[in-house]
Amino acid sequence: MPYPTIHDLPDSIRHVLPVHAQEIYRAAFNNAWREYADRSDHEEVSHRVAWAAVKKLCRKGPGGIWERK
Image (tube, rainbow, N blue to C red; front, side, top):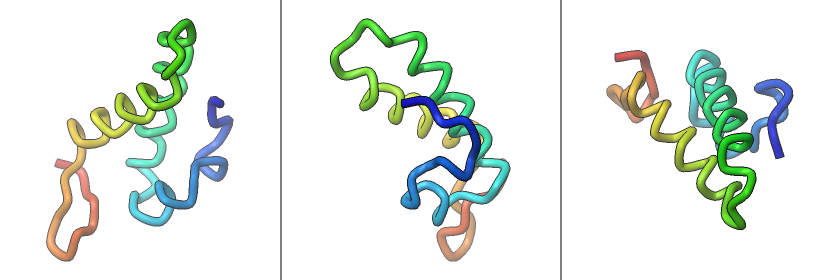
C-alpha cells in the first residue's frame, strides 16, 4: 500500500533513516507501487526500488548512520 506520509512508513524504515531519506524512500515506493501495480510481487519490488533510491542519494556514514552523499 502507498504511504501517505513518512509517519506511515514501517518502523524498520523510520528507525534507521533520517527524515530526508524517509521522504526519498516514500516517494520512490509510492511511484513504484503505481508503476508495478500489475505485478503480483509489486509490494516487494516497490520496497527494492525505494531502497535503491535511498542508496543512490545517501550512504551509511560512521556508526551506521545514513547521510546524504
